Image (cartoon, rainbow, N blue to C red; front, side, top):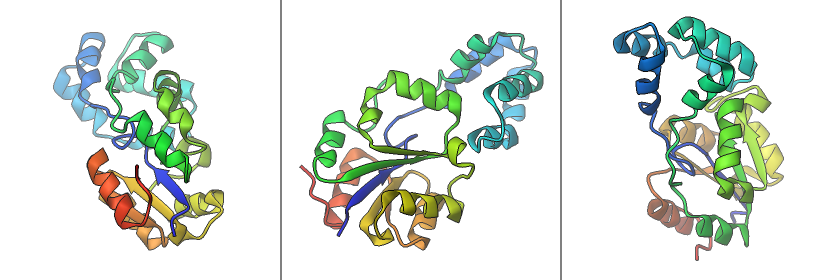
Length: 202
């Protein structure tokens, strides 16, 4: 029986478009747009930031150097958070209906700048009781260690956790840990998957 529902944040609760910041980067950078895109293909700084191995000032300095930006920290962070779209992918009423019967957790690969922005601008995430954030945990999905932490924090058996994530490799890693998991496509699809797992969906 499912007792805990654990949700990814990006592309499950909150929507985003990674191409949105490109126009602003193009206006601020000494690089051409193709050069900017090439720099961003190197995900090492992003992963270090999501893992909490970079401070926000480390990340700011690194990305400004790589992208040849001459902007303030505040301007950079405004640009870096501009990818988030205004409408969440899940209705607040849906989260509240789940919360009435189940404990809600969030398990997200995210950095400090993005999460701070989401916390301030998307109040529905505050309905989730416990937030397991990669930059605080020091590990990332789909690493097995992050699922062990999630199971421990949930305080139930793995098979009593339902997990939804938009990335197949993260879903598969959760299943390997014994968690019931689905690859998120839409709120409607999630409701159907929850129903099949025995979750009461209003």
